[in-house]
Amino acid sequence: MDNTATIRPYEDTDLPGAAAALTDVHATDGYPVEGVAHPEAWLRSDDVLASWVAEADGRIVGHVAVMRPRGEDAVTLWAGRSGDDEQHIAVLARLFVVSGARQRALGERLVRTATHYARHHNRRLVLDVMAKDTAAIRLYERLGWLRTGEAAHRYGNGQQIQAICYVAQP
Image (tube, rainbow, N blue to C red):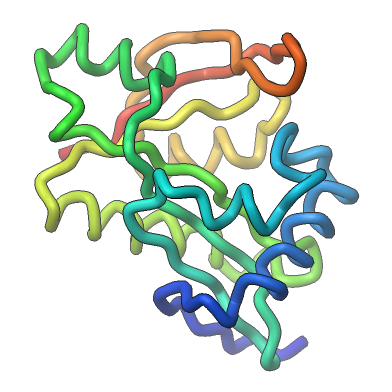
């Protein structure tokens, strides 16, 4: 894989490639913990406000989405602290980069793209990241995201995993 990669808005034709990348990342990292059984449905959720892909060598190697709040603990924590209503909050989600495309700042570029979108649309981005995903935690903290608390990330049939909640700098 060469070192050039493009970050661009997601298109409907990207769905198969993004789904394949998602299942690849899950096999490598155990992330995400949900959505893998039906990756195409998970990626094209009606809650997605906007999403982008990283493309290299003609294939999708990364993805990120900005989503409407759906009762996430990260949203509740930030709204309680800031007084913002959900109209001014969005969730950074579905961020992944396949292992063969890492070490090229694609995760950072995807996060910055989503952050720019949120600022332009007057929304504060929040997220939760599983405590086990230390590389993602390092990325968010390096980019200046502020830790707002901890929560249990709930998924599947009553399952949960410890997560750390963050908010993007204004």
